[in-house]
Length: 274
Image (tube, rainbow, N blue to C red):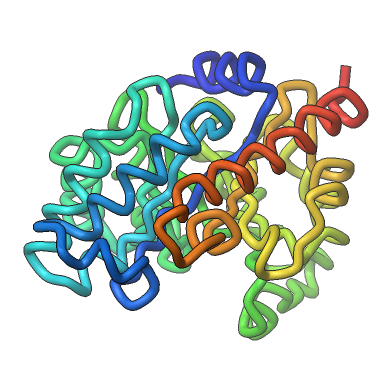
């Protein structure tokens, strides 16, 4: 999916919602365990209930690969079930050098046909550029995340330039690819940094986790992170997919997704740069 197609989805749905499919066998409604593939059955119903409000889906790969071959099968079926016009993100946080990265890219871009993949940048250019060789695919680079341990490295200062490590990552990686194939992960609980990062990367899309269960503010993310294309994919996982533990879980997920979409519709009017 190219940038224009993604923007078109945002405009049509008046939404920049990404639904995280962090599907856990221990958390899904128990009646689904009677199905041959409970993970896929859960995901299918969540997708059916939220597809009118979501512009992206983000399966967290760990939840699937932990189940072995069966989990990979559930993931493949899930990706194939997602409507073609909706952006797909493999939240895999891969990152290795040379042929290893290229094989990761082949796995997720060619075999599973994801539109994008999250990548850890610690090993530098030759761990990222193999993912950029695939036309029409995106790299979503970890920049400034919201977990407590992010302070261990991401806020370390380059004394020569008086810049934090995450700023160095953004500045350097923008030399490797344009805003039509490179996004950045920016945590919602770091709203004070989003405005600053937007100045560094004015045209790139941000994938923003942490709204909802993790306490991030959708309004602050929208106010400080939005650009003229919207430039945001705001992820909600637990707050949507586990909105109910009963047989009405899909309907509850749909209500939560719609509520976020309605807020986003208002913020697009108020904060979208024109």
